[in-house]
Length: 455
Image (tube, rainbow, N blue to C red; front, top):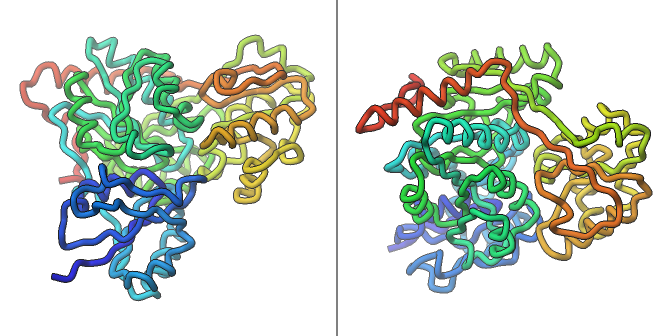
């Protein structure tokens, strides 16, 4: 029987999950390769036999997306499965057109094909773009649920950038676990703030196994999404974050628009720094595409200790990497803090960037006068350190969510910039409390916030 030859286009996350739940044990398909994009250092590896299963005793190669045509010539590819996130609709259709021009089908796998059903209630926190504030909301929800007497367990969208065979299931409960799993800076940015809030976090590659362990440990599962992807678990309450600083992107990027259309609750975040016009524009779009969603507004509150220290100083601003790179932002909380607290000069890091950090600016020319906290390998972390040290500044404003001094030693004073969501009135808190009350009072979970667009 002829097997259908497929390529899965990914970025070390959704692609692996789609393979695991749809293709791994199906003898009708032969996955010839994963392709890699968006992130550095994830190509030229192999999805190991321990994860690939009995049909793939040699594992599956991971190659750069630029080699797609080479794969077509070598294997006569029948289908291309697109499986990564935060891609503009225009870019997505260009990739589809490329695959179709080579003779293959181009396919997207949807929620019903890829979501796993949990025995425990699930709240998902997703977004329309990278950098909208998902992590802030997840931390906020953890506090609300604990206040309701429930134990939440956070399951994070995958970021397996190291030894894939060792990253099938990861559990983070202590800061020391970040070292145990040899986490990149990007992983630590997601896990460390949650750990410091007292949350247990699971991540990895095999989300069936992860789900079973999370169900044993917690009363409720919080899905903390990555980029603007939709959840791997079927949610009972879907929360989507929108960003008025990028008004219009909520219906211009895949699969962020999927999250927007599915949401029970849409949070317009950063209303304290966005214009009234852009907030209204986003709100109007939400009402047009998902009129049943409940719309809330939150501020993204930026804080620093002793902000007067910034006044008049020459500063280097470090921002969260993914938000600034493929998230498309020119700057973030760090740049806001530098301006709000009257830095004398914001030093542009481009002149002082070295190695792969300098290459990041060439790949993402939209970046403003900030330094993205790139650290996917020890070498890149060292290049980041050298870039920081080379800049002639009085102070470093670090808006990466991690304690930067924990992963590198720098001689310059470092001041942390923190950011959390803030509600003017506790509407979201009330929604979560009501949801928690429903769970406690019913022997079988019934969804209290029904979206008529979903079956």
